[in-house]
Image 1 (cartoon, rainbow, N blue to C red):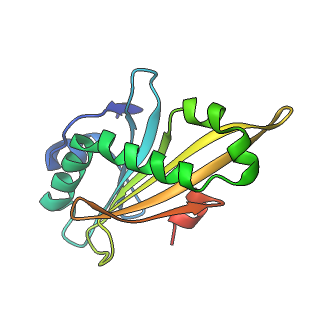
Image 2: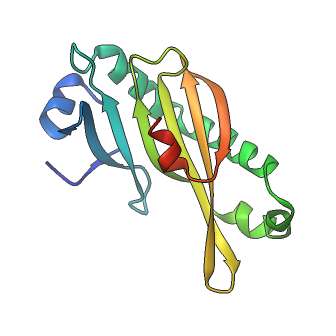
Image 3: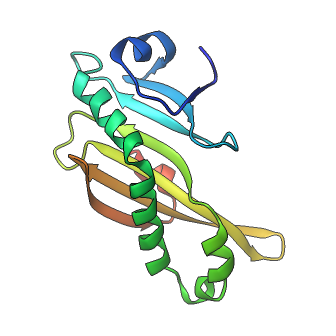
Length: 156
């Protein structure tokens, strides 16, 4: 298996051939931009294996990814703290980093979770991370929440 796959449409065959099966999820790192930034992709494996609607959900996600990232960036700006507002110019120049994309088939509230963040210099050499957890159901964003630890909270 290649360490990273490019942002491209998936098929069930590609997933079974190229992804690792870890704890009932198919996993791969997906490169999503020209700077070789990547996110961890998890496709939750149900009792019937990867279902066609999960690959369809993922393919629709990557088709509309820029639209989602624009909405997430706008939401993130609306949550700036007072100290972050002072650094708004720096924060607004930074690209939103995608950390995790999870495609689930069993959750009644969402079928996709995107975990994104921006990192900035907080004080001297210290850096601070602002994270957003976004849930999507049927192609529509249902919730966006700013999280202290988005990766930990995504494991619920």
